[in-house]
Image (cartoon, rainbow, N blue to C red):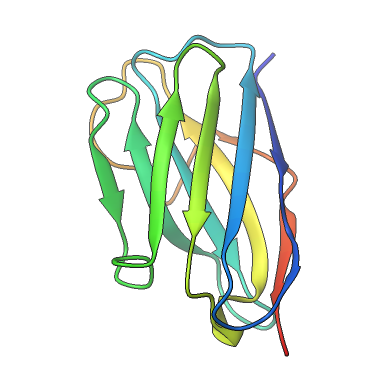
Length: 124
């Protein structure tokens, strides 16, 4: 059974950094795409960043470029999202999601597996 468990969320002040982790189990990294999505109150869910475990290609949405960094650790089966220079509009529930096997390229909106999500609040 595929499971994705997020950790590392919380309350931070504007301009600060936060590291989210996603622990994946039930599958082996290799031909999956794993990404981070978020949903702010009253808004639709949006993709933030994605990494291909096939070739370590990384994809970022405009909201994340220059501030966020996604990385994967094949030995530990974890995906990390490092977020810097956080803003109040980054406040949302952040979800880890995966699609595969035999998936190549970036993350689509309709991922196969989802974590339960973790809240991130950016406020002074």
